[in-house]
Amino acid sequence: MLRKSPLLLAPLCAAVLLAGCDGKGKETGPDVSPTASIPAVAPPEPPVTAVPPSRNPLASFDRLDAAHDGSISSAEYAQGAQSLFEMMDMEHDGNLNAAELQAGAAMLAELDGLTPQSLLAVADTDNDGKLTLSEWMAFNNTRFTMIDSNGDGLIDRGEWAAPHTPLPEAR
Image 1 (cartoon, rainbow, N blue to C red):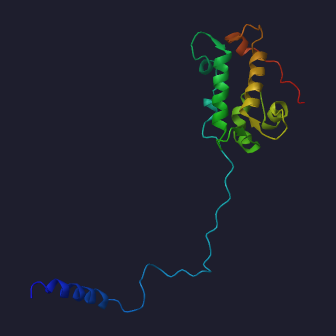
Image 2 (cartoon, one colour):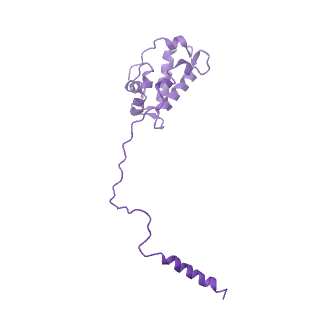
Image 3 (tube, one colour):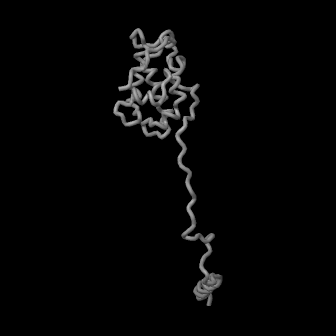
């Protein structure tokens, strides 16, 4: 008889478990109507720069002079230019569009009074309404050359403080 009891026990357990089912179906949560409205999604906010203009890598001689040797090399200047580009590229797509340039307008203004429109007019060489890193760096290489008035490949404090040549005219 003991050998047959496990065989009798399995159907008995199944019968007890199934007895709790009343045929109404399983409750899994609130009923959701197929016509329920989908929550509205707010339109995206324009990009903003999280970096205050006081941290602009191109606005301070001391910040650019990474070697602390009293002059800014073209490599130091290029590193600062790339850092500013990355700060303003809020979409992280390798381009600065009009909204990103507008969000960074306060930082651009520290660079010879640039506005997003004047920067695009001068530096957007393919006229697609945005700046690639290549266009940005070409603009900043030109700017470095304009500030380096004696042409020695270094910007000293005197050149940094002197009035700079105006930006080239837009194409």
